[in-house]
Length: 79
Image (tube, rainbow, N blue to C red; front, top):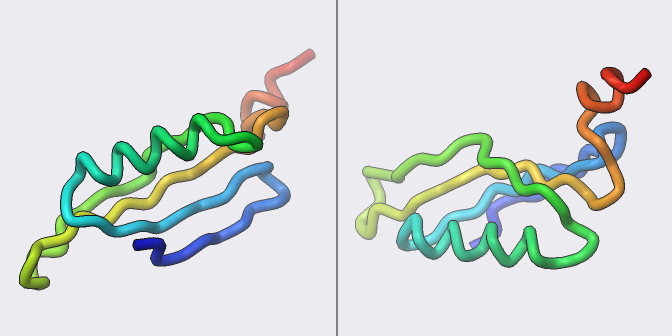
């Protein structure tokens, strides 16, 4: 389930929060994101198991960089 989307236009990225029954399902989801234009690099920011919920779903936050945009640090490193 998609829990939230946080656009970061100044960084050329989007933060996505999602939840699924297993970590494998979430990793499959992140792989699909990375394979879908205009998305590029997908970085895991955080993951956790929601222990209090009956089915113990896994939640994660990823940062998805848009293709053709560089991370701010990488852009600053260019001469």
